[in-house]
Image (tube, rainbow, N blue to C red; front, top):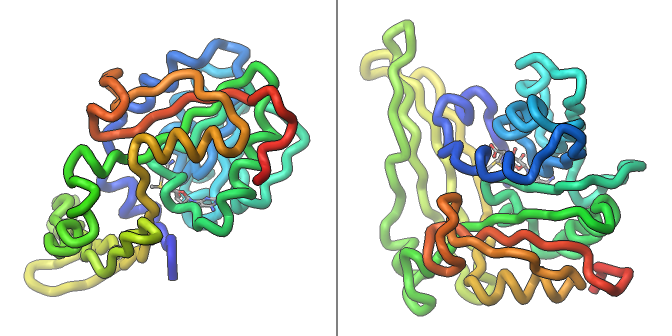
Length: 257
Ligand SMILES: C[S@@+](CC[C@H](N)C(=O)[O-])C[C@H]1O[C@@H](n2cnc3c(N)ncnc32)[C@H](O)[C@@H]1O
């Protein structure tokens, strides 16, 4: 199954939180935020401490209930829904999809995804999307082969309080350079001594985009690019590990293609 996140393991191996400070620059005490693919609330919670309200949306029952179990600020609303069918009766000042959520959106849901942004973004609101920049590591010619050649990477290892050990790694299964899709498994294994006592496999399919393609894609849905960066340390676009694009509604009404 695609996109089978396990909240406990996801939270065990924290991703770099540099994006949180980055998003905070866009938030005032009355800002209404929509966090698409909020997961277990890594970004929603700290933003809700300073924003007017944060609506976090995720299709994973597991991730949303893990977020709910962390306690809820009065101004944080957690919604179990696929982004592509989201229909809230509300518009937002800031829409985000942190940690490359957009790369997990299937190409056939891409139009719906941008329609959802169009519907929920205020006229003067800002949407910030981020994906990784494959050209930071690989040339266009080599990504499909080189990415697969590596086979997998160790992503982390952590010791549990009962002495058990959790190992986190990925397996790379298939790359499609025409569709620009990468298929992998994120694997978590818990060991007690040498004995494997639990394993969780999250099968993911990620699209990837080159810097010019990502900008063209956003513009093709009628949005107006406001600012770009190559990473959360404000690197220049195309000169860092991330592609971060802030955009607004364009002059024309519809974001559909
Ligand atoms: C890499 S995690 C990022 C979680 C969170 N944004 C963060 O930064 O920690 C991707 C999240 O996007 C969610 N997701 C992926 N596709 C989705 C979709 N179509 N609708 C709703 N959630 C989706 C997954 O369930 C997962 O929780």
